Amino acid sequence: MPSHDVLIIGAGLAGQRAALAAAQQGASVAIVSKVHPVRSHSVAAAGGINAALNPEDSWESHAFDTVKGSDYLGDQDAIEIMTREAPDEILWLEHAGVTFHRNETGHLGTRAFGGASQARTYYVADITGHAILHVLYEQLMKHHETVDRYEEWFTTALLQNDEGHCVGAICRNLRDGRFEIFDAKATILASGGAGQLYKPTTNGLIVTGDGIAQAYRIGAKLEDMEMVQYHPTTLAGNGLLITEGARGEGAQLFNAEGERFMEEYAPNKLELASRDVVSRAEQTEINEGRGFPDGTVALDITKVPRKRTLEALREIVNIGRDFAGVDITREPIHIRPGMHYIMGGVKTDVDGLTSIPGLYAAGEVACVSVHGGNRLGANSLLDTLIFGRRSGEHAARRAVQMTMPSSSASRVKDAEKEIAEILARPPEGRRIGAIKNELGETMNEYVAVFRDAEGLATALEVIQRLKEEAAKAPVDDRGSVFNQDVIAAIELGYMLDCAEAIVVAAQERKESRGAQFRLDYPKRNDREWLKHIDITVNGADLPKVSYSPVTITRWQPEERAY
Ligand SMILES: Cc1cc2nc3c(=O)[nH]c(=O)nc-3n(C[C@H](O)[C@H](O)[C@H](O)COP(=O)(O)OP(=O)(O)OC[C@H]3O[C@@H](n4cnc5c(N)ncnc54)[C@H](O)[C@@H]3O)c2cc1C
Image (tube, rainbow, N blue to C red):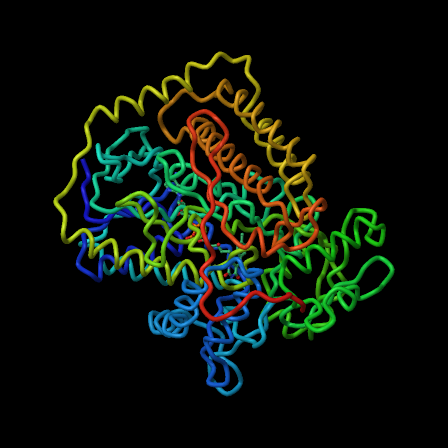
């Protein structure tokens, strides 16, 4: 039975950064991932990572932009920590081997990103996540004596002792279907976001909200779940991302009448207003009949010099050609807002501690809350690394003071029974894929850029019916080797839990703030709603709602304009 000081579930940027930090503190570490670590979804991150590293920039400016971007829902103590620690993190990455872009003077070069008052996004062409993830993995290899990697292992549940403390997890080896209990003095969830519960989404198939649901099921608080980000530039139909880096390099948005419509919605920042603002502007143009017949507007990347596009945006040149049949260096490409990121997640403090002792969370699975109502582009990679590192360090320090817990082997029997029950489902039920499609389309219709009470009520009704159907959904593969059918059945349960939490929180927040725009409550209402909505499990009933205060240190809420 594996036992470690620190167990990390997830090997994207947050998980690998946490593993390195814990190992450097001398802890023994296990890092578990349902896919090979370098296939974690962080590999898709494109445009870059923010830091106020230039002498003419300041962490205060970065922090204020982030607070404003969050529509004043972000916790300012956490934002201060993230933005203060950002420059050192970039330098650490550079020294570790990340080949950040250099400008003509040989210095680290930046590009502009939305909602930022300075160009402070550091990047590696449009493959920044790929570049950082591979360097972290190389660094992890150096620590092979203290970091055990469990690649292609799937965590099904978190384990608690009699006092309710998290003492590890139960995981299934995907190669042979064998379950193991992983005992740990501290467990860090780094299992990413929940994009797949929307259709379409920019997120890969593996991003199914596992960690959010696993923490929720053992009683952890979720926070800001209503805040789901729609990215302004995704391809219609398949949801593939055209990085914000394109607008950062100078690309412009036009409606079907040839108008550069952002002049009306955000006269100062135009296409580089924050994502919620640009997505709402696009959706308004489309809804009011000024979009193209395919429900899109146009992104004109020909405004960027061709040489620069080929050098700095080469991935989206490929995406445009392969997935839309468009040469973006010569003609505009049709785009629309698409689901991209979840600001909410497992509620943590600035060291990653959740409301369950022994359980930490970092990265997209977590809500610190540094993004509040709306994340600024290129602040997520930063969040994964800063709070991944802080969680790893804190968890390692905690582990030193503890004896190794040990969970009952009967938990393996319980897990095996759950799998046997899935395998034994009669074949008549509705297919997992069909249920997942209906969930995604429902969320995209009713819990998207614009929301209202009626649509949210419809979404909740659908989710509850889908939960019943999911409990009976049959699987075809009855084997134990890489049985992805069984995994899909388990993931569907996680996605439905996340969807329910999102809808309940969106119903609760009766105002418009950040990514939550309520057509029936179109104004921000600081008097009643300048607070976080927290969600906890409530047996088989709808989740329980409570509130927690927003931490305000130096920036008082004011009207937000770009
Ligand atoms: C297309 C795209 C482009 C983006 N570009 C940028 C950008 O330029 N800048 C920026 O700041 N942000 C960007 N983002 C957002 C950013 O990439 C993500 O928020 C971030 O990478 C998430 O990292 P993570 O470590 O939290 O999770 P992930 O990288 O998603 O890793 C999750 C890990 O958890 C594991 N896991 C999940 N469930 C289980 C389970 N049940 N059992 C075992 N393991 C499990 C997975 O295998 C994986 O290793 C982008 C996002 C997308 C989709």
